[in-house]
Length: 102
Picture (tube, rainbow, N blue to C red):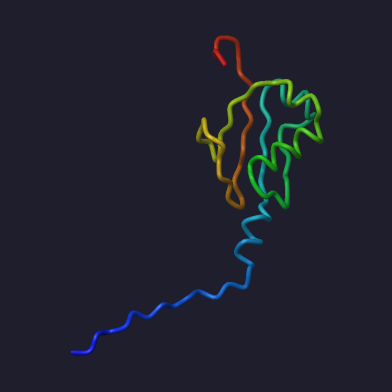
C-alpha cells in the first residue's frame, strides 16, 4: 500500500488582512466627568491599531484624561482586561463613582 502524502496548502495572503486589522474605526463614548474633559460625549477614531493605541490618542488629544480612573465597556459589555478591538466596535469610558473602590 502506498502511503498517502499529506498536502499542505498554504494560504497566500495579500497582506490586506493585517492592514485591515490595524485600520480600525472605533466609536468612543465618554460618560460623566469625562464629557467635561473631552467636551463631547461621542467621538469617532479611525486608523486605530489596538486599544492601547486608542487610549494614547485620546490622552494626547485630551491631556487631563489620564488623571481619571475609569471602567471600560466594549459594545456595552464591561471588561477588566485590555480589550482586543474589532472594526466598528464601540468603546465606552465610564468614570468611577464614589464607592467604586478603584
